[in-house]
Image 1 (cartoon, rainbow, N blue to C red):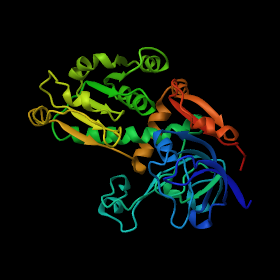
Image 2: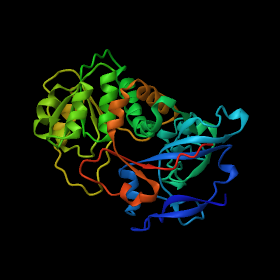
Image 3: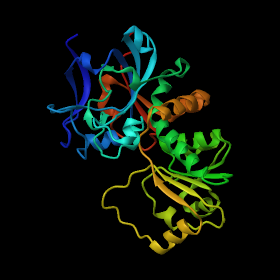
Length: 355
């Protein structure tokens, strides 16, 4: 095997995405060889393909994309803890070479000097190739019962981290949260709602649509679907808010009637130059007088991957399966990167070749 197929781009160049032949992953990438089963497609991938950002590995023109992965171990050295046939997911971020204090402690998701790399995003090839090599510390085992649903692990780590930090902040004082508001019923929002329901919280999920798959997915969780026009009432009842759209104007304007403090976690990323009108005095009063917290969260470390794996293993597999609205074979790869109105999560499938 001298070459393999991979989805690649020239970072910063629009319309450069292609299914190309790439060299076999080098031995120095790690002692575990993984055959890719599936790649989840998210907004980050589409932005990289659109030329908005992304960085190829040093000295290379093209970047293999794909950071939401699912694979099967083909070869593994005896001391790696993995064996042929294991279902696995690769961690996205790598610590910086210095490392900073956070990276040195294994909290590479909190890197403070921005010298980290990310597979499929920044300075390191991603997982959208037929094979990749990896070091075992960057590989997470997936419950075999999940099958292709294991591709949801990486997006689930985003909300596992959000919940981890929310609960750590909450423990600064006596805390008894009841209601949670999730804004956005895309894959991140729905997974955030799943983890809220698993914690026993009264959960509201807000989105723009009035019917279809998203409201039904929310109701099947036992949560309450809220149309955007009813945000004020839902926000007034929420002790915790997880924002998954990047549009925070309504949240910042919303007034809570409750004296208890609230925690707002932002996971969505707003476009640069997005215009909004924010009353800094109102924001200040809501934050200070209610002991509230507004914080951002992105990426995840190994602990969050393990927390997410447990959450998926405990979830209804039929509900998880309905998060995946399309599975596109590799030979039809352009269709995977074309968004459709009813999409929640699109998955690009690779041939399942036994190790």
